[in-house]
Image (tube, rainbow, N blue to C red; front, top):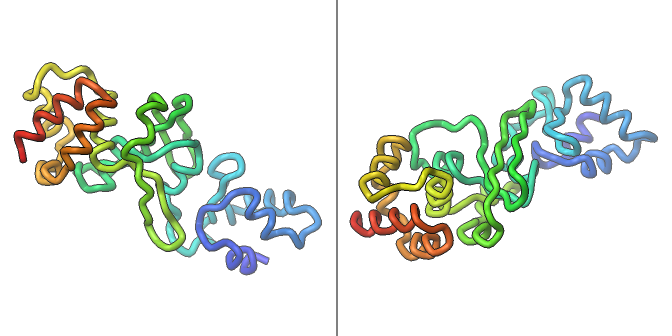
Length: 208
């Protein structure tokens, strides 16, 4: 049974409907699912969302994929996206995302997932669908949007020197990575996000 279940599920992350279908030969799939949970063969991330336990896992599950699935609509951003693009040196443990719904925090058996609210009017621009492999794609902020989100949730900056201090002292961001930012995208984001991103746009123009 376990081999058949493992072969039926191509990814490490799956929902209740999928596993229920995979166990449809059983008279009561729900009872079998509870048994698998008790034995640690599968792990409940949240209600209706699971990953395989160590005995059945073929590869590590993706926290980025789970972040999209746990709460939506949402996209990965802020420190997690900056780390994903290699723009900041720190490895981020909690996965940080943006949502157009209420802010949420999920403390799960596989990690912490944080969601911050942003106005739906500025939610969509700069969100990209990134293919991790043939079975996985994630919604993640472009690098320009990820940094704009960081600046949007930061204190109001006074001037470009304060922007520079925030970027290089606080975030320890890679200056070469910033130089590759698309000025047109930052200009568009500054029109949506306002003051801090306007300052960053002016600062970025000086680096080009």
